Length: 334
Image (cartoon, rainbow, N blue to C red; front, side, top):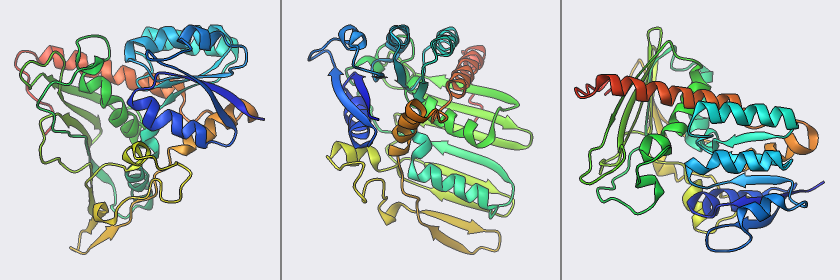
């Protein structure tokens, strides 16, 4: 059986992620793409009786109305992160998918980053002992304001709406629900209409989880830092799958997701011994293989909507804490 899919949106997400991944998944067929620059339009694609799966890769504020229309039309749905921009919207979609008995999942593809898979493997190995501090930084250097909806004031925009869902989802997958949440948001670049910096601190007993992002980091900080009672692991660089896809490499190619050894992380033990740790191969294709299995075989979805909803709840708690700190703006994490 082949599931016929329709993709709504063909910006970076559609081009670099969804289109190549769907085309590389054996039990999926990408039959139509709806964008602002071509036909068919989203409503026509959703109404197409031959399309079984709708994939939504559009501005964040449009996720909810498009997903709701697709579910009401009896389609299975994949939504790019963030799931929605409010908890009420997320709850409505979850209830609607359950009522219509349709597959609903969220594209938290960074669960399949090679560096994150490596982090999970190292934590599971126990080599670092008990992890007492986990850091995840996602920095860029973009001092100029770029045109586009992500830089415009509105629901779900700014760096917290863009990169925050990834970092939060990874932390929740590793450590579960935190005991406490603190956040700091700021608009640091001249002329920006949205936050371009965040620092989030999640507390788990004595453990601290620090998630940050800045658009004014010419020299990025480590992507991951694990600090345990028996050692540490530090990793620089970003997963290669996005640039590989943009360069035209097929997700089915054996080289897809394989990181340049120069970016492999370093594990240092308490006795001072250190070693380079080969980065696991990243595999975004696993997401869509699981989507196909969920629709055809009744297997679990790759990302539970409830997980994505909880990530939204953390974002709301971060915003509330940051607002309470304003105008002092004392950062909770460094």
